[in-house]
Amino acid sequence: MFAIVGFLLASQLQSVRSNTQAAAANTARLETLQELYNQEMDRAEALEQQLAQTQQDLEHYRDQASQGSAQGQALRLEVERLEMAAGLAEVTGPGVTVILSDSSVINTTGDEADYLIHDSDLLNVVNELRSAGAEAISLNGERLLATSAIRCTGPVVTVNGRQYAAPYVIFAIGDPTTLYNALTMRNGVVDILSQWKIQVQVTASDQLTIPKYQGVIQYDHARPAEGEGGQAG
Image (cartoon, rainbow, N blue to C red):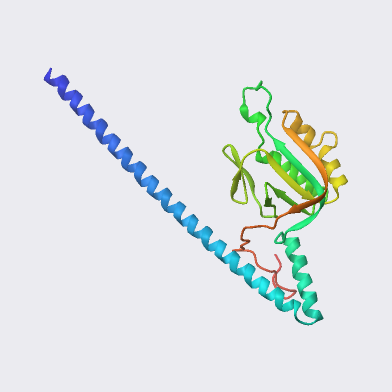
C-alpha cells in the first residue's frame, strides 16, 4: 500500500513539474510574441509618421512649383504624372469591376479548399488584367503596385500587409471592352474558376475610382544605376 501511494505521489509531482515547465515555456513564448508585436506596431507608427511628413513636404514643393515660372509648372505636371505612374495618386477612368465569391455548392471532393478563393486565383485575375493593359488596379480598396504581395494567410488573403476575406472586389482602369474580353474569353480565368463554382462577376464601367497606395515604399538595397561611367552587372 505504501509503495503504491508513493508511486502515485511521485507521478503527481512529476506531472505538476512538467505542467509548470510547460506553463513557463508558454509564458516566455507569449512575452516574446508580445515584444515582437510591440516592435511591429512601433515600426508601423513610425512609417505612418514618415509617410505623412513626406506627403506634407511634397505638397509644399508642389505649391511652390505652381507659383513659379513655366518651368516650375512643367515640373509640377511631371511630378503628378510620376505619382500616377507610381500608384501614389488617386486615379479615375473607365474599366471593369470584378467580384469574386467563394463557392456555395455542396462539397463533393472532400477538400473544402477546392471551393474557396485562394491567392493564386486572385493573382491569375490580376495578371490577366495587367496583360490586357490595365493602367491601375485595386483589390478590396488596396492599390496594387509592382511590390504588392497577395498571399493566403489562413482563411483570409493578405494584401499590402492587411487581411481581407471574401468576397474580393477588384477595380481595374483601362479599356473596358479589352479588359472584359480578356477575363471572360473561352477557357479564360473566369471559365477555370467556374469549374469549381467560384462565383465571378465581371462588369464594365464608364467611371471607376482607384485610391492611391497608402503604404510606404522603402528601398534598402536597390538604388539608381550609375551612368556610362558606372559599373554594369
